[in-house]
Amino acid sequence: MSTTKWWVVDGRDDGFALEQRATGDIVIMNNTTSEEHVLPGYVWKHSPSFGLQIQSDGPPPYGSWIENPEE
Image (cartoon, rainbow, N blue to C red; front, top):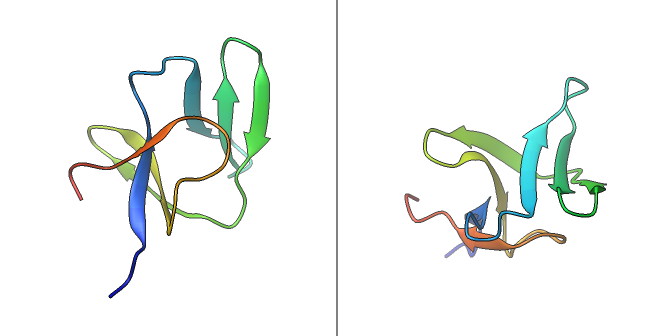
């Protein structure tokens, strides 16, 4: 059985946001400190409720993540 899950940025921590740039890069940003990190190599998709989500065995680095409750 696979341990791969879909992860979304924890909405209770409003300091972080995930976005797809025009270049196609997926970037996690801390709006408080202006820190940005590109998340290369992840499978991602759009969710109607949560926006972008990342697929991985565990939460991506940087930011606060929770498992997508809709998956």
